[in-house]
Image (cartoon, rainbow, N blue to C red; front, side, top):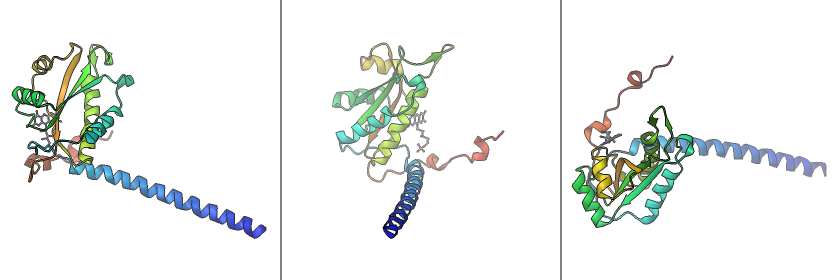
Length: 199
Ligand SMILES: Cc1cc2nc3c(=O)[nH]c(=O)nc-3n(C[C@H](O)[C@H](O)[C@H](O)COP(=O)(O)O)c2cc1C
């Protein structure tokens, strides 16, 4: 009986050690996974006309949904431009939609957004949402390009947005055209010594 008890205790100890080792490996893999993803992403400005699967669009939108926002008010509203009419329209309004098959038009609701001392967190909230979306798109093998080169009022009017939906940025998204490479400036990043100060 004593021998069985001892055996059980040893088995439990071995199992616990293996589990904690596996958890450690999994968390290290996850950390490397994100850094690899961050290194793999680059601005794509030429797209294949292959449609983006709905499941991937859903997953990109879900990644955005999980983003933190000020006071958790979630002021974002995302328009998924994908009909031929919408895509033609956005390409008329900016040269930076790059004829991607999908363009996310990320807006924030001016009536919901957290505001203090006359400033709101709309662009900040949208940027975090957009970064989640951009990185999920990268994970799914899709290209994106963050775009600010458009007139928000013109875009709002063209897509008949309600007055409280303020466009923050566009995120063209799709499979990169064959052979697309990062622009030269993708490889230029300042050293941390120029952008970080410890105090
Ligand atoms: C806030 C913001 C605005 C940007 N606006 C545009 C834009 O209007 N058109 C464009 O082609 N790229 C735009 N970009 C993409 C940047 O030019 C690009 O991310 C940067 O040059 C670094 O290159 P990489 O993304 O390939 O690493 C924008 C990026 C950010 C973060």
